[in-house]
Structure formats: C-alpha cells, structure tokens
Length: 596
Image (tube, rainbow, N blue to C red):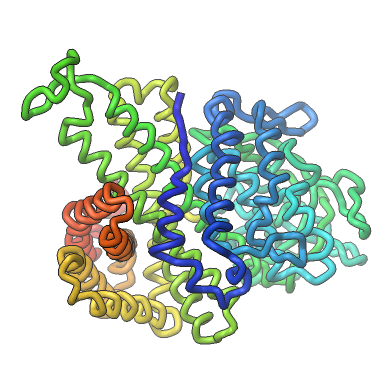
C-alpha cells in the first residue's frame, strides 16, 4: 500500500527562511502570524490529510462513485467521514474573509493545504477545492445579498460549489455555448441545457451544491460577449437560508475516466432549473475567470502533489528493493544484492523528481504571496505589480507543473519496475490521476497560447518587463556571493534565453502569428525552468545561511546538492527550447492536412 507524509519541514523552511511570512506583517491576516502559529497550522493540516484523506485514496480509486437510478451520486466509502473531518476543522475557510465565517489567514497557507490534500487524496480534495473557487468568484461578483446568503455555508463546507462551462460541442471556445437562460419576471431565471465534465457535480458529501453556470440570455449577442453567469443551487435556497424544493438540475451520468475515480465527474442536465444572475448580464465570462484562475492554480498544485507522493513511495522502494550490485562493487555484501538506490539511473530519476518538487513548491508559494499582496495590500503600485506577476505566471504554473508532475509520476512508477504497473503498490493510480491535470482547466497547449498570445503583449508587455527586471536585479544583487556563483551562472544563462525568445516573438510573430503558435509550448517550458531556477537560488541562499549557523547541516547539504543538480541537468534545457522557438513554424505548417 502506498504511503504519504506531508512535507511539513520543507514548507516551514520556505515560509520561515525563503519566503518569510513575517516580512508581510503589514498585510491583512499576516500580522498575528507567529512562527509557532504557522507551524501549528501546517502540522495540524498535515495530520488531517495523513489520518483521513490518505487512508481512503486507494480504496476510493477502486470503488469510485456510483450513480443511483434517481440521479443521486454516492461517493466511495470513507469519503464523507474524511470530508467531514476536514470541514469541521474549518480548513475550507482558512483564508476566507472573517466577515463570512472564514479565518482570514493568508491564501499562501491555503495553497500549502492544497498540496497536502491533493497528495493524500486528489479526488477527494477536489470537492473542497472547487468550493473555494466558487465562493472566490461570488466574493468578487455577487451582490451583497447573494454573498450573505450563499457564501457562509460554502465556507463552512455544508454546501459545496461547482463550475459549469463545458458542453458536448464546445470546451475552450466558450463562445459556442448553447445553454439558455430565460427571465421569469421575478428576478430569477430558468436555465436549460447540458454541461459535461463537471467535477463534483453531484454527491452525498454536503447538504447542497451551488452550481455556477455559464448560459446565454435570449437577447444576448453572439460569442463570448453574450455569456452570463448564473447561480443554480441543487436545492433552492429561501431568503432565510433554509433549503427549499429540489431544483430541476440532475446528474445524467458519471463519466468513466482514466483516473480520479473518487470524484464524481458528471453530465449535468438543466431542465428549466431556477437560478439567479451573478454580476452583470453578458459579463459572465469575466466573473467565471475568477474561478477559472483559482482552478488553474489548484491544478498546478495537483501536478506537484502527485509528483511528491509518487516520489516519496519511489524513494522508500529504492532503498528497500534489492537488485544487482553497485558498479563500484557490493555496497551491501551481507545481502544477496544491493538496494537499487546504488544505481546511477535510479538516482537520476529520483533527483530529477526531487529537484522539481522542492522548486515547484517554492514557486507555488511565491506565486501565492503575489496573490495575497494583490488582494490585501493598500499600495496601488504593489497591487499592480503583484497582479501582473501572478497573471503572467498562472499559465506557466498550470502548464509546466502538470506536464512535469505527470512525467515524474511515470519516472517514479519506472523505479518500481513491473511492480509499478500493478495496482497493489499504488504507483499506477498516481500516473492515472496526474494525467488529467494536463488536460482540464484549459489544456496545456492552450495555456501556452494564453501566455504568448495574451499575457506577453498585455499592457504593452508590462508584466514580462516587470518579471525580467525582477530576475535581473535578483541576480545582480548576489553576483558577489562566491558560494552562489555556479547557480547564478545557470540562472543567468536561462534568463538570457528567455529574453532572446521574447524578443524573437516580438520580431517575428506579429507578421506571422503561426510562429507564436509553433513556439508557445517551448516558451512556456523555458519560462518554467527559469522560474524554478530562480526558486533554487533563493533556497540555496537560505540554506547557506542556515549552514553557516550550524543548523541541520545534513538537510542544508541536501538542498545545496539538489540546487546544483537542477542547474547542471535541468536548466541547460532552456537552450533547446530557444532553438525550437527560433526555428519558427514554416516546417511545422508545411504539410497539407490530408498528409497526416
């Protein structure tokens, strides 16, 4: 059976020494956070995930969700008890506003819990994750009355939330949606249509499900300019907050999927279901983007989370499994064979995964801090800068962390050999679960196009200039540090490739947009390597400081070794990505369609 232990010490290292939360004491929710309080939150959250989520992960995968004849859905055995433990602990409202029953703590801590829950049980974690995304959208776009009615029970976890975008005939191109909304004359609307791939669309974990649904009013303009957002509850909610009649929204089927079997991915049928408008008519996509961006960051965390739990199990196996002898001679002469950890190729895979995991975790929390600054700072310039950086990095995080997270799960499975291919050891579940993260919330190719086509030119390229200036200043301020020089050389080269690729797009893609399309995926991964490398230098700097103080010397040596490995083995790939980008689109687009 697979195991999981939340990486508490690594998280505390980041929040204390690399990205110190105490440095942001001026932000709302940060001021009262002592180191002891941060540690208590992280350790308690880890315990909930290890004690309740992880034990029902494999069994939930085997059992899956069951749709009953009346359309109700039953989640796997043990899921409700685990969800209740999480809900009663107040974890859903960790960073939600106190005015609605939340704890008002930094969203950075919520991202920590996002990793822990997704590593312990990705399918179960999605019920709460989608709820947090839904009430984030309502906090920004709902009316005061709607907020007061719907948000507190969602923060409490008594009600959950969903996001309804995709239809059978359209996914990314939301301008094609057919779901209709008809005004009923009393401030409510009748919603009719079908949505597919709706995660947590129907289940037995909560008393009510709040569906956020994109639909089109009868007089709406065509395309995305004519999309509105509606709140459609499973049970109608009376003005006093009590539950009324069952709404005309049902689960028509549960999708039969490759992974995340414990999450009910539903076909949702809306048959004159009653709903209310959220925000302005025909401006629904803007409101839904709040939830979509929340979800994309959540999916990025899933990429890391599956990579982390897969690594943990692979590392344990590699130290226990006996197979062959070390190339330099027997390392365990008293045993019939050496543990496979002695073999360079096993170490290659483990170090590739581990060096990614540590940097990806830092990058997620660095990005989360930008979000906290954007939402909590009183300084307009700081807010603008943080919004620019987070907007720029969202497609990078989603695309790169899920691509590499999946690759790492496959590597971890490979370490098990044939045992990794059978379900007993759990590795094949991690591979299957990780695979969806590359697809949903905008497939990774779409993330790359969003980065190059929208985020780079936005506001005259302000965000990418801000990012490159930040990295350039970071390198310059540390160039006199002899211990960091080898790492800075690798980072500096990667940044140079990123600058060169950005300028190439500016020179070539305007006249020929296919150049941007052909190079977008490589640009996203080039950007990701630079961002991960930036995190490694930050972590190495902190580790050197702790090493000088004589604190936990073995752990600091491990960090510095992983930093060197990343710069030596991963960062040079930026040059290959640059070569792909500057080769352009001509060969790629030369074959006629019927030649494929």
